[in-house]
Length: 74
Image (tube, rainbow, N blue to C red; front, side, top):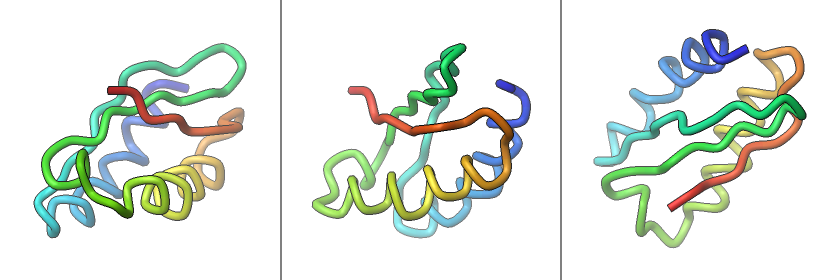
C-alpha cells in the first residue's frame, strides 16, 4: 500500500508546490489510515484541512485500495 500511496502523492505534489507547499508521507497504518505531513505554505495555511480532505484524502481513497482516511501530523 505504501508504494501506491507514494505514487498517488507524486500526482498531488505538483499542485501543492504551485502554492509553495509540499506533502510528505509519514505512515500507512494497517487500518488504512494514511498520515502525512504538510510542508511549506501548506503547513500554516488556513485552508489546510480543506486541502487535506478535498484533495489529498479524496485522491488517495479513490486511487489506493484500502485507504480509509488521511490525517495530518505535525
